[in-house]
Image: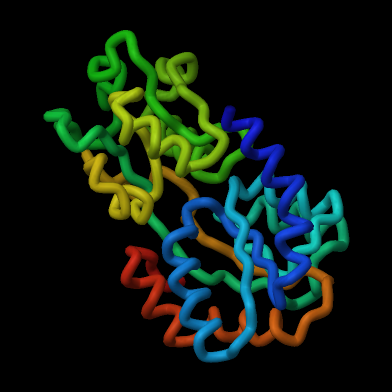
Length: 248
């Protein structure tokens, strides 16, 4: 069903964007904060912004296939570089917009306690169940999680016990519904869902820095230029800060 949802997104985005002044493709973890930022910009500017959210890899491939987006905000640098290498990004437009942290979560009612230290016994908590991650081979949140578990020396045991989701919000939902006893998401995702709680924060030295780069794609739009500039300003930073994002 999640894969079908991704297919529907790919089909409807071009039609939804036709009536928009600016179309933004953004990592799923940005949904709540960017919706709030977009609403503020629309009120002050009069421009209509449409934001479409999914895993960064899925959005980058939609851009590659001709989806009419003006801005792309990824949850890691890899998928921005993917588009840069294909000549789809306006030269000189790349800016690191936000930063985040990676956390281990459990259902809110769970009594699990653990510290994310080398050799941490994740398998002992999972028993015969699986840990929810965004796809660790393609989706930024999953790639960060894999890197962290490798640094802690426990990925070998976990690799076959992963419930791989299409994006980080889908991984969050598996834990929120109690379908997985543990999951790894961004701190901002966990703060937005009262059905989960943070068990521990991954030490920052266990994974690459979690940075959200933003780029202007080559579709022309003065409104998109204005929105990109506004997103780098103080009002936008204040809004994102309320949702738990850090400035870069």
